Amino acid sequence: MKPALIVLLVTFLSVFKSYGQGMEEASDSSFAAPEFKFVTIDGDPVSSRNLRGKVIILDFWSSDCNPCRRSMPQLEEFYRRYKTDPRVAFYFVNSGWETLEKAKAFSSRGRSGVLLFSWGEKYDLPFAYDRGSSTLKAFGFDSNPSMVIIDAKFRVRHKHAGYQENLSKYLSEMVDRYLSEKNVR
Image (cartoon, rainbow, N blue to C red; front, side, top):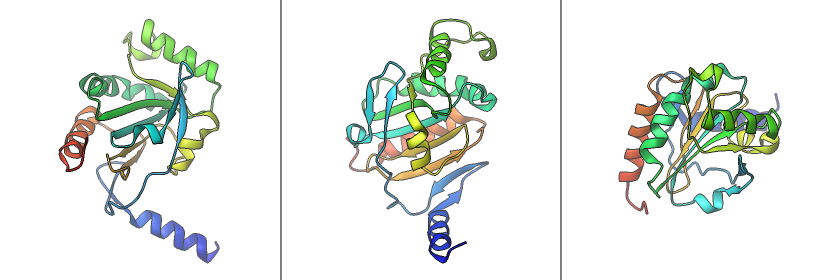
């Protein structure tokens, strides 16, 4: 491996510390989030520029990901709690490894009818699509489910890859903590 790449990798990894199984908490609050763009499942553009000043949660998924589906009830519970809070932005982002049409079929069934693998639950999650996986890659992820939490100062505060137990509770604790910090709109 080239020396410059090793230095970059060590620097990136040293910015995060382990927080529970698979969750990493930023130990350096100056780690700025990369700019990103994706679309809602209905095709409306979403840009990091329009989300600045909010606590942002991006959860990456694909329709063939069993842990993604397993976490949906917890994500729905979390989303219901914060969906009317203008200081919080949450998106359930298809990682772009499948077609937009497949992501739409999954999300429309999830919102409006019985989904065989969702145990009959209906979801009102804010579904989105990451064309070309550019946002997923910008945060250094290469698997689903993956999640990133960005604070109101646009700093990456948590990263997570894989299934997380008690996800709704954990996310609520983190969001409440970041909303209580100074300079949050």
